[in-house]
Structure formats: C-alpha cells, structure tokens
Length: 97
Image (cartoon, rainbow, N blue to C red; front, side):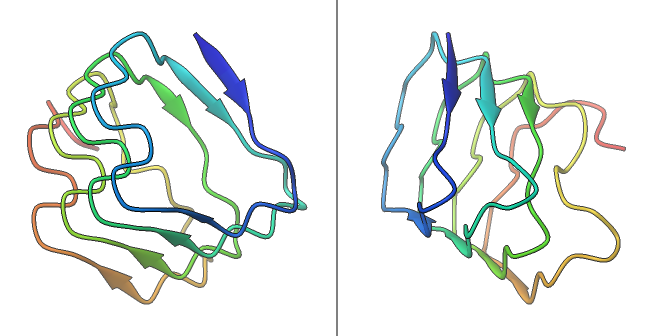
C-alpha cells in the first residue's frame, strides 16, 4: 500500500501508522512542510521500503521507525535540517547504509 502525503501535513503524530504492515511506500514532495515524525509513528511497519524525507524535517522521535526492517537506508538527506533522532528510532533495520 502506498500513501501520498499532502504538502500541508506538518507531522506524523504518536503511533500514527503503528503496525500498518501493508504500508510499503510513503510519498512526500519536495515542497512538503513536514517537520516531525514523532514517537512510534511507523512502529513495526516492517514492509515499509520507500520513504524520502523532505529537507524541512527537524525531529525523528523515539521508536519512529522501530522494526521497519524493509527500510534499507535512513531516509534523510545530508543537507536536511534534521536536529534530533530519538532513542531506538531506527532499531531493527537491516544492513543500514
């Protein structure tokens, strides 16, 4: 399952997509206003493969991508505005690059 996120969304709140095991792709545009992915937002979404974070992202909360074992890379660009990554945010990812 793919979801396309409107540019006006500013955060994924606590456990917003928890255990959405059919979720494979989250599509955000470069004009996205997303600034935060909070605690457990994608907790145990183990089929999530594709997510590209916009430069506007500043916070990734605790357990945000916990057990997202299909993600192959941390989805943030080198020139992002990312300021904080919470505890266990990417726990359970395989072969992170």
